[in-house]
Length: 116
Length: 114
Image 1 (cartoon, rainbow over the protein chains, first blue to last red):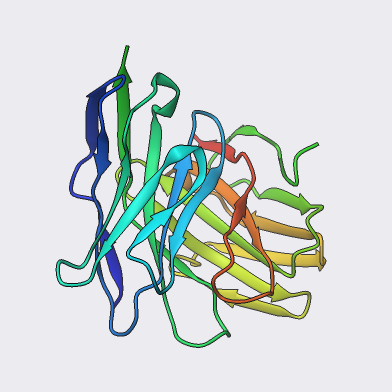
Image 2: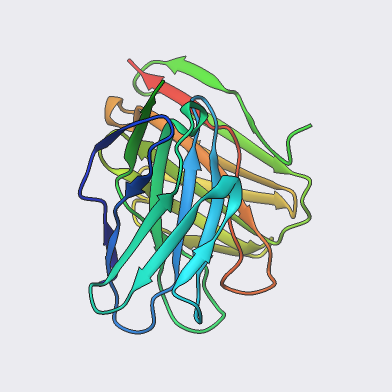
């Protein structure tokens, strides 16, 4: 079965410092990976996705993610954290093959807290 | 106005009651989904629909039912609510344009069952 793991429930970082939110995955075939962000009292918002090609994927709000096949990881990164980046972050992997399905398997989420 | 609208935003009800959560979208997407979010468990898929005539069970469909009344409307029902169905419920949509399309979420319904 396909799955994703977010090993950290919470990540604390000072404003201006680089941040990393970790995600590892397990799939049978090619991984299709996503990051979503959830702000308080809001639904999830798409940040970025990895399908194929360049291992460094750039997304919204200055975020990027690095795909590492040998380590089965897809860590979310940002060079300089902002207090407004404080939110709950979800990694997700697409389940299934071909174009018939679009089900996502979500991780348990990582709360990012950026201190001023 | 929001592209994906969920009503109500909050609901408190009693065990055994029938509850309907509604979702409507203006994105013109064919695919719609219902998830529940529980602390420490992430999001889990309840039901999904690829068009009006297509309804599929997700990971945790027991105790729930859905109706796709139109392309833009997808409702979730709890026929006889129980306390462990207390959770945050999200509706989402995605375009048919491929299995790699992002999902677009509503702002959620916080449901408490006493």
